[in-house]
Length: 208
Image (tube, rainbow, N blue to C red; front, side):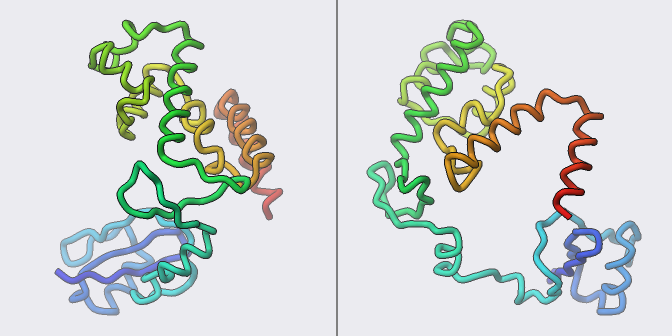
């Protein structure tokens, strides 16, 4: 079934529904997201601000070259990857995959040591043997995203604690901004829900 998409900037949702329903039905659906149309509910999901365009063609995005230039990516030959890749420099440097894995391994070991939790006790929480877990800390095996999330759970660690030392550029374009943002996030995590609401409200007023 062919579908078309409507961007509704009013409530930040993208709509998708069969083209056969016609423009009148689509127009109505744009403003009535909870209503069943022709016996079927239209699908909604959040999206980032894309502008006011409502055409399918407008959603095709920039060309690859434009995207590379916009993000400031640079082509690099990484010995750990068969083909050239594009990476984002941070303070004029690019950490290759081997260095990233090394730093994540160090972060894991430091997080575990900080909690005084031996490998023999941590590994069973992950459903693996101590030997298998040791491969992560020794750079032999790479963490999957799922395993990283699991580790954060059983270590009571934040993603920043494990990832930031290896990829600080994900938190800021400069070292100063990254350090400041990471420190801010760490502080925010200590607040209860009521204080977070107040902080969020304050930030909203500052942003406007």
